[in-house]
Image 1: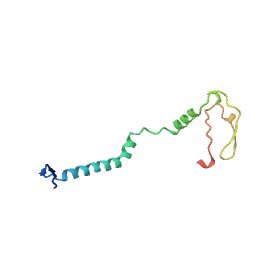
Image 2: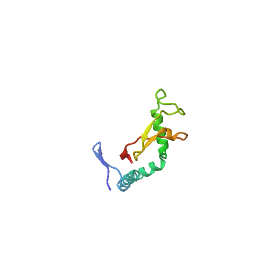
Image 3: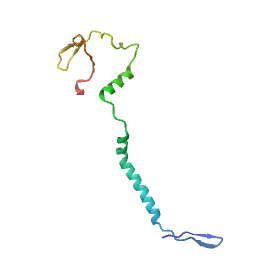
Image 4: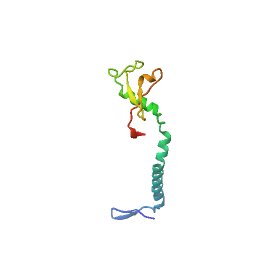
Length: 112
């Protein structure tokens, strides 16, 4: 318990006693809410975040950002002759894949 005292025109003025327990309870409750919010924030943000796009969608989005209509071939045009090598070092002609859909992905050997 504490009392609030001050002097007013030479006489001492005392207000009633005020217990500290409600104030301490309020401070502890606010700190508990803050700690709980910090602990739950990853769970809540993961539940509300949009789903990650599929790898195919990621490649398509990346390609759209790099598309240059003046430089890139038009979709549906015949591809130029191209000779590549597989991971087993076997030659592969693009002509051998004619008639199907082909996607070429260039990556380092160590990329897995």
